[in-house]
Amino acid sequence: MKTPDTRRPRPGSEILKTALRRNIGAMTWGTVLMGLYQAGETAFPIALGLIVEHTMQDRGPGALALSIGALAVIITTVSLSWRFGMRILQKANTTEAHRWRVRVADCGLEPVARDAGLKSGEVLTIATEDADQTADIIEVVPLLISSLVAVLVAAVALGLADIRLGLLVIVGTALILSVLSVMSRRIGSSTREQQARVARAGAKVADLITGLRPLHGFGGNHAAFRSYRKVSTEAKHQAITVAGVNGAYTGTATALNAALAAGVTLTAGWLAFDGRISVGELVMAVGLAQFIMEPLKLFSDMPKYVMMARASAERMALVLAAPPMAEHGPERPAAGGGLEIDCVRYGALRALKFQVPAGAFVAIAAYQPRAAADLAAILAVKVPPHAYEGAVRVSGEELAALSIEAVREHMLVNPYDGEIFAGTLRTNIDPSGTSGTVAEAVEASMLTDVVALHRDGLDHGVRDRGANLSGGQRQRLSLARALAADSDILVLHDPTTAVDAVTEQLIARNIAKLRRGRTTVVITSSPALLDAADRVLVLDEGVITAEDTHRNLLAGDEAYCLAVAR
Image (cartoon, rainbow, N blue to C red; front, top):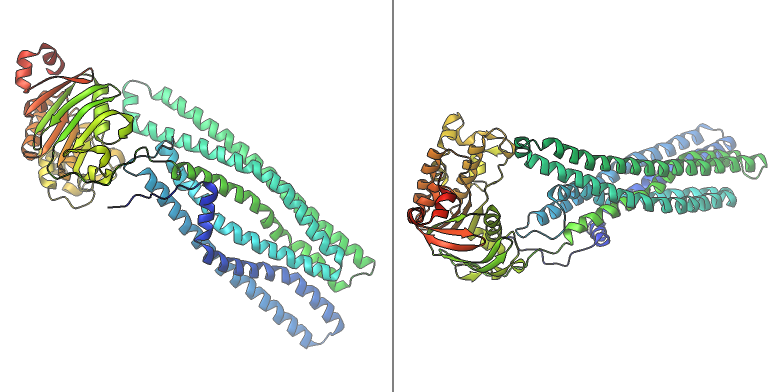
């Protein structure tokens, strides 16, 4: 069992610091190698200038061979340092992105949801795009430092030729960074807004996919698609805005870098014309003015990527820093216990009170669907204990005092719309591969005809959300999964609404037989399931108004008869 992460949640800046701290080794080696690469790139025009200078003084073959050897060493250094430096940094980047994806997904899949105010589609975007952009900081810092190395080497080399050339590079670089740092702030805010709108569009798509069938059923699909088009259009407009800001940033950076390179070239030409620097130094200055464009571009791009990484880290902090909706205790419920609802007030429930003894099969006939849904949500621990009045006790222990993982192991609440996953029939029934009652669960849920229909049997492929199964088949597959879990307490919410009456009758009998001796609660209006239960509780206006067997209630309660008779 996994121990919950109880450490203090971290804001976006702390996320970036954590990423940098745990990759310090890779970043150090990457910085050294990329610095060597940039130094080699910058040394190339310096070497050319020196070669021209010395070759003009000593025109022998020895000087030429020495020059060729020096260039070969520089080229080899540049090639190898780039290859291994980027390999180290990209491996660290990919690994760090994976860590944050897993961390965000872990928060999204915790038994008690976090109060982040985000939909699943938004969390998915944060776990993918934002995690990747946050991890980019691993590459940004070494590249920033290595670019600075190139600029400093160029400035020193030019300064040795003439102090004015060196000062021109230093002052020009400082001015460029000052202008671009101001522009990068807007990139950060625009990117943050774009990611938020893209996430909302993703959440809308997830909602549409989930509700596509019922939407088609009552003709609401066109209105839903228009709603998505609106959200998607907003995301598109924001993406265009971000592209415009990025374009302005890139254009300004390129123009300023080109202006600096042109300034260095023209100044060097003027100095050479005036006789203050030699021809070799002129060649070096012109070459550096061309080569320095790459590190300057890289250097000037870094503030943009830093702001993008920071914006994504702050979005990840929305999930990671969100507190759990409920804090649960460390206790575990005793095996084989019952279930007690004691004066619970929540939503449509009004001082609801009932008890299910250990080993009993109880059906709850809820006249209002909202009350049934609220009760199922509380039992499934989707509602934190502080959000409702009263108490829920499992095996005599209050829910708030129990470990949430232990509650989930002890009591399974199977919703009426249980998800079907891509895979096979077997992996949907027994995801962990540890159940010893798969065959019994398949038979009890009347899924045998589906298994027999396909040559692969239980290994027959199932598409995402059960797209290749009918509604009744999906519902029976979900029921089989719940039965195969073989939990101490099983709560079923409308498990047979999509099957025919004959199949429903058989399923009801099979559930009663398979679950004999274990606590079972069925929230339903199905006459077959109500008749199979040991007793029926009538839930009306949020309270239990009657309690008896199904047949006695049919004979003596007219309202019950009207509500459940088909």
